[in-house]
Image (cartoon, rainbow, N blue to C red; front, top):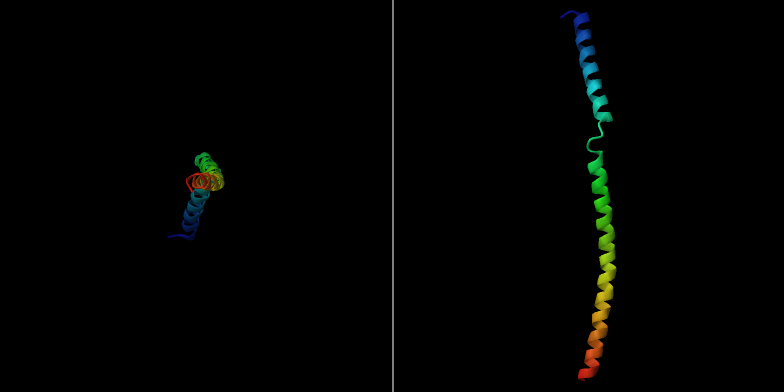
Length: 74
């Protein structure tokens, strides 16, 4: 293989590779899904934190009701 042909072939491969990388860099087709998943994860985290607080309030309410009922029974 002549040196010129080798360099020309390498140049073509490099140009195709760089073109593919440029297309991948500018492709934003999956961006909406990632944003959607981040929002869902944030909502799940907030719901989990909120449910912990709600569970604590419900538990204390049952304890108070149990104490009132225990006062009437004994």
